Length: 297
Length: 305
Image (cartoon, rainbow over all chains, first blue to last red; front, side, top):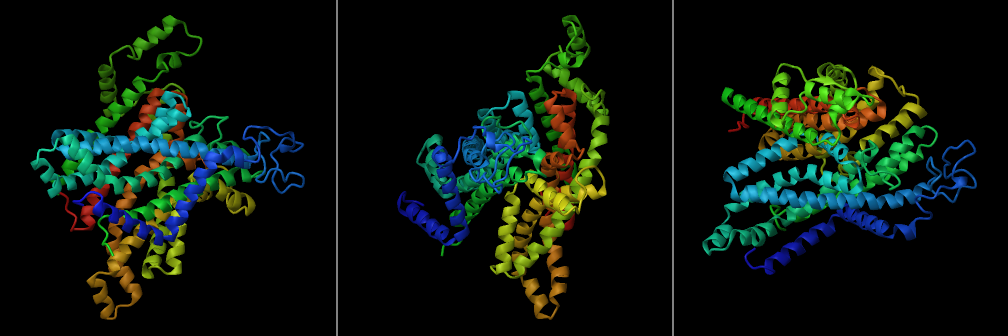
């Protein structure tokens, strides 16, 4: 990796070639792209408004109607307990899930990389204190800590993003720390020291590029974890608040009707599972493709 | 070995102090006023002030915290405002339910994970391997509350195989399945990886070469070596479950500690929040120490410095 641009490009090209052969990873990637398109184009794709309550969306005794009922073909996946179109709500829910997943992950990656890189690069008592703190935070049950923080700060979508970012960075810090400690002893870092490069430059120009594959993999897998966390918080009623449509909250409000209207639970849950699944597939594939320790064929 | 155990115990104690300080700090900055909650909505400002000083809530942070820590070491975690009973008693009445559920879930995980993982590893890249690993990843991606409600609908309601509500051995099956399916998927992936590695070793080749039957190779040569990572995983599972089992408990109305913690948070019952978090962290720290120690006992090659 001595010549910037030269070997780096061929490394990326090799990684891409490996990724292209991994059909499952590509499938995951395609679904992720589809999700992004749905999130961006929700107003044009969704058949109805996610908040409009239809009179014909409720049966005579006030229950949600299934899609199979004659005359209710307007609602492809049936309606929810408020007479709203479930499909439109699920499509709009993509926005909330991806927004929280991506932004919370960005926050976690930033904090985790900074803490891990500083602790690993400087070592000594700075590193010891930072990593001890990380360990203590990791001993907290993630979901309970998130619930407590959200309860203190009052739930809103931005608070959810902040809280998930704040509870998730420790994992990234651990991984980055381990890598930086290993990199610190390598010759090219020593060489940079020897020619008098400032520490800032060494971290930014020499350490970070080597961390990039790890960060890409964890960035992808982290989105899966964070989407799941948001769904769990919203399911428990301390996540995204109505009227913003969130998949977890749809399941929570639909579960009272799980016997008479199972679709209220089935479809939003399927949306969560498929989203988490595709980010996991893509992340797994990226790990195999980018792994710098794997033998290059 | 004794030195190592002592070191791990000291590290654990340090973690516990850190955890309790952080939790106490979080609650200290809570916008809700515990004295107000405790004295009720109709109390006069004078009563609230009196109760505040009685509870020591007007003291600085470190005074409050050290009082709490000293009492906590004597087994007194305070008094729950909402439940009107000692926190220790409230937790002890709910903790067994959670522990039973976690234990049952781990059994489900092992029953799924070990056979599926080995079957996959015996014929890598075969159709069985690909399909089971794909299912494993999907199982790990499915939200537990969705899985629980789906099982409840099909197995409980449609097929009437299991009761829909209540607490008892029959009611334990579906929650345990729900909690164990996702984790079983991770066990299968893990078991597959370690089995593939072990199958490449010389001692397996030797065993096969001298005509040991395949069943015996699996039982005597493979399992023993593959169990190390599994023990570590069980040790990591306990903390994970303590944090996440609340989702399964909510679906099935299981009266465990996860529900207690969420109820405490929602009603701003400060002593109860502190108590559930501290007890959870306590179990987490102990289980990580037990895991490390049993790992070194099981595998003499792992003697950590």
